[in-house]
Length: 359
Image 1: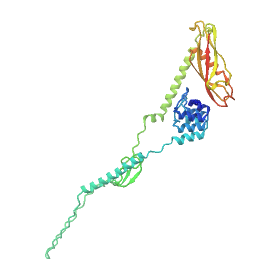
Image 2 (image 1 turned 90 degrees about the vertical axis):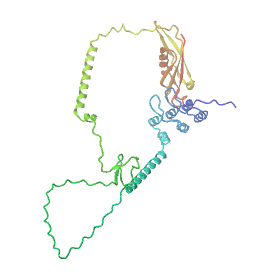
Image 3 (image 1 turned 60 degrees about the horizontal axis):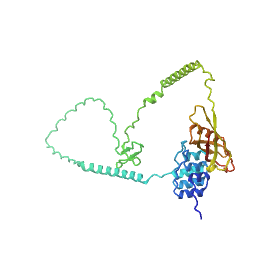
Image 4 (image 1 turned 60 degrees about the vertical axis):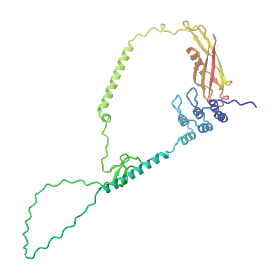
């Protein structure tokens, strides 16, 4: 049997052939390759609503976050076209669980803080000497003939100013996380279990940054005064420029009339690739030749890459090759060409129209 030629991955995706896509992936095709518009094969599969091909590309490792020249990725294209099943596929495929290593690291730091706190408490107990209380000595008995000595009269105590109230000491067991403000009521905990930062006193005041100068200016009428002054100056400047332009003498239109071309070079169109045999009308290109032109013979070939809608009309074109005049003429003619919707099978298609200019 003859060997089957592998279809390019871009062509297989746009045509909706899932078997050709599987064959291209199996042959080592790049699942993130792009076309001339910067669109990846995954974006093309979303644009043409090929859900099965989208699943094949995602399973093969295609990245849905790559953006095209318009700045859109495959997820945003699916949202614009209302393809909720494809959006769910991308969302479920890109969700990544939190790594267990980070959780183990937090637990390790928390246990290290608890161990450090226990060691500090044990060191403080060993460093503090025990308090020894002296027992009171018994007083000797008084003799029987001894007269009691008169007790001195108590002196009046001086009047003292009332002492200021002393703030009660806070309990050292009540601590707070400086980030999440979580309260811990244990001497054994020195670090927050969530943020792994050292705890501070719970009654310590929370610092709030002062109001910035920018927020102060926005809350005052000064900002609005500056805006009104800027708008007034801009309006006055525009009025002066318009007054000056109105006084300019307009030159005679006959002196600035566009130069007429001496001749036109015809460009013969040929549809190639996906568009071969599907054209209804292929407009010829006409490239003008002027008297002062540098071309004595306008010969060349221009390839126009076009994109068609479902009705067979060209809605996008880009020319390559030839000079600027040939590219402009070929692009204008390509946008006027039409193709059969039945042969396009009612879907958007892209291909190439080649224009050959001979003088």
